[in-house]
Length: 370
Image (cartoon, rainbow, N blue to C red; front, top):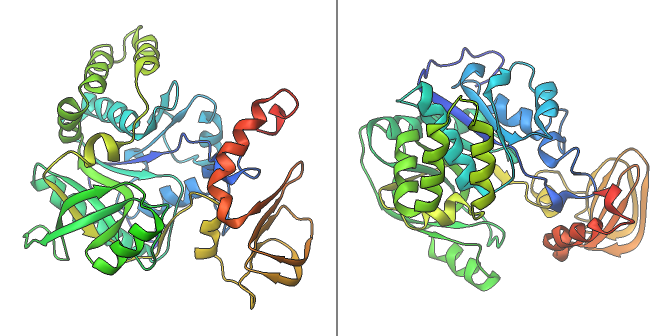
C-alpha cells in the first residue's frame, strides 16, 4: 500500500495516536532538546515522525491522526505535519511516560467520540514492508472493535536483543475477525539479560514487544482505573474540566503528582484479555545508535555510515556525520557522531549510557549542547 496512491480506508471511529514527546537523549548529539530524535531523519529524506504518520495513512485519514507531545515541540510538529489539524496535537505539561500519555489521549477522544478506538504508536520506529504493516494493524483494529480486549503487535525475534521487552505467546486462537495468526498474550517481560534473551529466543514462543497497542479508548481507561487507580483518578478530574477555563491548570496539577510509568509496566504486565498478533514486517525500535546497524547496509568490514566516511583498518563502527568527512584509522566497535557543534566517540557496547552522559550536560558550561 502506498499512502500517496491508496485512498484512506474509512475507519470513522479509529484514531492513530502518535507518541512524540520524548527527547531521544540516547541519540545525542544529533538529537537535542530543541530538535529531538523523532524530528530527525536517519535513513531517508523524511523524519521519523512524518514516516510514522505516512505509514498509517492508508488506514486512517489525517483528521483522525493525533500527535501527543509537549509545548516546546508543538511548532516543530505543525511545520513537519502541515496536513495534521492543529487541534489534533495534544500537549502534555511534562513527560510522565506512556501510561499518562495514552490515558490523557483516551479521555480527550471519548469527549467527542464514545466509540473511539486507538492505534497507539511511538514516533521513532522504523518499518519496511508497509503493506504488511497496514494489514496487521487492520487485523488488530477488527479484533479490538468486536471484543472487549487489548491488542498488541509482537515482532518475531531473529536475535537475542536485550534492549527490547518480550511477550510470551500463548495459545493460538481461531477468531472470525482475524484472518491471520493471533495468540493470547500470556506474559509481558521487561528487558532481559543477555543470557535470558538467548533462552527466550531458543524457546520459540516469545515475541519482541513492539510498543504498538490497539484498543477502545473506554477499554484502556477501565484498565487504568483498575490497575493504576491514582492515574485513573487524575484522568477523571481532567475529564471533568474538559474544555473549561480550568483545563490546562488541572492537567498541570495532576501531572505534577503522577509517577512516571510505562503502559507496559502499569497495565500490560498485570492485565488479562490481551491478544498479540505477530507483525511479519521489518521493524526496528530506534532507541539508540546501535539500531542503525539493523537498517543501514554495512560495508565489507561491518561499518555502517550515514554521511561521508573514509576508513582504513576500521571494523564494525557506526558513523553519522552532518556533511564533514569523518576519517578513521585502526579502530573497531566505535560510535562516532559528528554534528556542527559537537562530536561523540563512544564504545558501541556503551550506547545505552549516552543518556547518562547527556545528564552531565546540565552543568553550567555544557547546557547549551543539550
